[in-house]
Figure 1 (cartoon, one colour):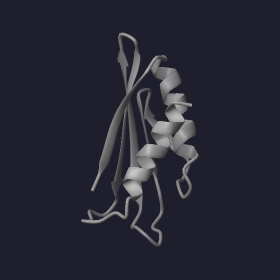
Figure 2 (cartoon, rainbow, N blue to C red; figure 1 turned 45 degrees about the vertical axis):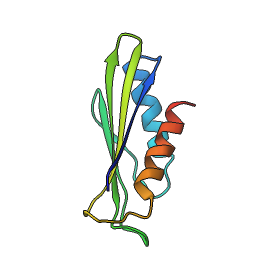
Figure 3 (tube, helix red, strand yellow; figure 1 turned 90 degrees about the vertical axis):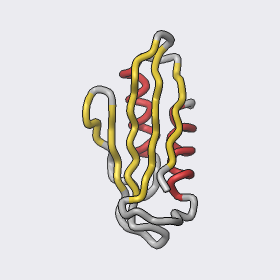
Length: 99
């Protein structure tokens, strides 16, 4: 099941996207993320023991106080059970955004 979390950051959208890129690149098994625009990036894993791979998407939206960042992780192949991998991916990226 896909997991999504949105966080507010008191930084510019550009700084938020840089933080997100560092956080996603810190995830094990992920290929280097690449911004898909000035406000989003996508990173993917290869198939592993516990899954067929995941896609993590980060979308940054400007707000009056900084940026809103939405992080989504979903399995490449729909599955009823993801062994908590998507939740862990989102939690790791969100932790990286706040550091």
